[in-house]
Image (tube, rainbow over all chains, first blue to last red; front, side, top):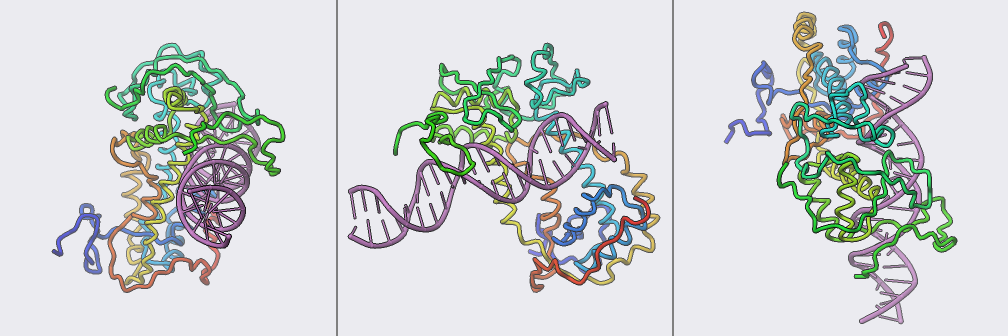
Length: 179
Length: 179
DNA sequence: GCAAATTAATGATTTATTCAAG
DNA sequence: CTTGAATAAATCATTAATTTGC
């Protein structure tokens, strides 16, 4: 019963030999305050703290709970990388096929879609990074945007509003059946 | 049970004078089928549809009733945020304020550690774009890091200390020298 | 049974971040 | 260092559920 339950770790004897393999059990679990401080530091511009800074941070944060210097180091590494990854992901991947070819355009993102849409001519299915299962849609189509301010407020602040009132629709085909 | 589909903007001047500076339009009231399809798409992994997708979804869903693209956009925004919110509330169990033994014991040898770490993973922080998991909710990884970094509990005897942000910790002054 | 009053859900806006380009 | 792009968080506002008194 005291086996290593997945996701729940038995009290692995104080000194966790958190080596390289069994990171499950001896992993640092930051407290709220620790995360708060780290995030504040990150937000303040700190990205790659020096060793001295890491030590100071770690010492300070140890007040809130168990922490080691390496945790601080890793935290910044991961946070930096993941923020970046997140940005890239939403900017490029979320946009399915549209392009990576003309990445110089960089506007493959749907947001600038209104402005540069007419330029899309050749989209290649780049690196099989197919994120959405619902690509039963025909992304290849270049639909016309009818930016019709149908609302009371004409200045729309959200990035993309397309008013498409096509009413002649066959029964729904949105299933993520195939690609 | 009132089957009247919500119209567009009720442009009737002075009709619904809610006085406040809010919207003056009646808001979208999704039909059951619309919600069902949107939820299915969400559960399939779609989180931030591109403009193309939004338009197609909107077009498809208009078969079931009045809808605009912006409604689809808003729906995904809200649904994503609220699912995350829900999950976050559930996982407010993080604070194990554990005063472990010799917290920063490894600092003395941390320099070597950091050198190795730098060598290992400094610039090579995974550039891999993870494919979208078809059946999992891609929650914010940061939150996972923050709240689920470790399921390991030493003991459940420690009292929670959740909002002790007013400890007597001196204000961190870490960014002093090398910023 | 039925509406007025109240509460819960959720659609729509605003605000505060992030990274990256210039 | 400043600005652009694009959210995601926080908030506002309205609709639906429900409670309640009659």
